[in-house]
Image (cartoon, rainbow, N blue to C red; front, side, top):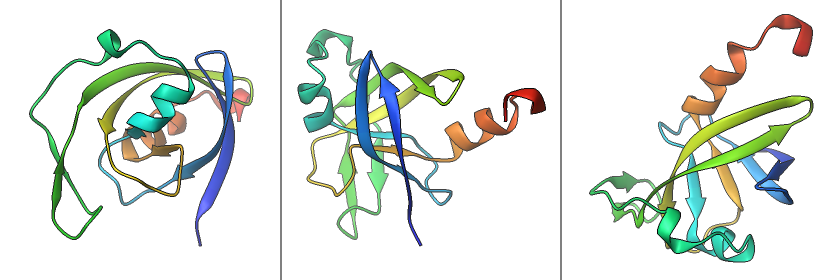
Length: 108
């Protein structure tokens, strides 16, 4: 069963944020960045290929660091930016899951 959150990202509320413990990357669709009006020059070009979206691989547009607030906790997380139609606005994978586990127990 999928787990979706609503988070604050770059001073905007973002719904349909998917938690996926099977993903080795945090993923941000380019369409989400466009809706958030995030400048394209914040995307750092890279040569990463992510797998699992169409049975094969998809090259990323690049990576970007975004500020997230989830409940009372703020995260600075790197996302791989993809230009693929998906059912979520952000995907939080194992990098975020590991960061969240390191929170002091008083914040959970």
